[in-house]
Length: 464
Image 1 (cartoon, rainbow, N blue to C red):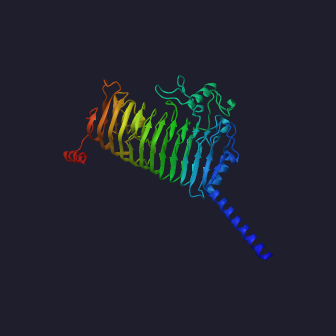
Image 2: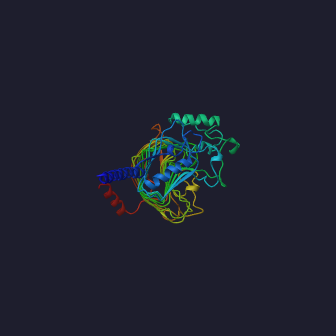
Image 3: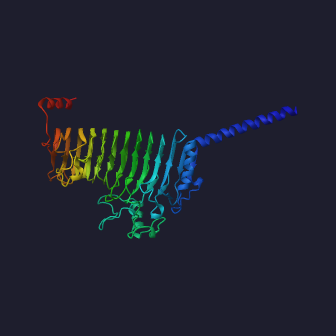
């Protein structure tokens, strides 16, 4: 009898250990890993990079969610890299709090000046939440006299940005040590004055970025490279209109990108598509201030951008709307099968612009090819359904290379662009641009057409 009792007790104990062990394994595979549990302070002063790395190792191995919770202050994070490949099939980063970049030179080294937060070789990564990443670009920009961080006329200021500007005027930030900065209080870093990107992703396939906010990146806010199948939605990007080189989202060497339902206000391109970007869909993006949605500029060989569809986007107070820019010295490559459709414009300087001689353009519609021949071939580009106002006379600029074939198969349809008051005249200018225009204001009479058969073919396509 006693033997049976002992056997039952051991069986029950073994079962309980098995169950508890199973629960523990499930939590390690799919639970929540809070950075605070790994030593993060969240006081805005202490560097929490090591705690973030410790939490990352847990989710990278076992899966689940890395939680950056909301705190009263913020998480100060020195430049860091989160690396894969991960054993976990999916990794989620939940951003509820605010993360700050260091605002003094002591937080940076010459080796890490190009990127603040880097994530590489992590597949099936999801980054989501209503928190923010603040790069404190005001400590890097070193703007000329007469330029400050004030918002452009008509631009809304958030309470957070007002606080940032208040701190900037006092020249005091979290972790500041003015002895490490230049004589004007700006950070200098790297042998050639390098400036960091807020968030850089390399080799991250099946990437999802949702709802987060990127503030005041010293350079471009998001860099996406060698990442296939990317979806970015409902994000906010914010930087002053006069902040230099602060692109919103830069894409290169990437296939299959969706960018949608987002607001981008910055000092450079809202979205820029670079070398070997294809199958890109950009929908319902509010851009402004900024330099528009751009393809290019391809300083080197191998542009190879194709199958880009930009639809139902709004441009407000931007320097450009839909833009393609290439250097005449670029060697080879192509930009083709590009469509901008159903675009709304409000006070845009150049709503439609192709510039195949980007570096030499002094005034709209004029350029020089003395050192090159428009090496990137531009073809099959459509501008359809543009409506709104232009802040300059040059509503449409098609500045193609004077050498070779220029730009071919350019189509403009249902364009209604007027001056800001409705009284100013606007114009279209072209150079060696081949294609067709139909129902456009201003009238586009400068395109070089083909033979009558091709015109007839175009008429047939309109009626489909």
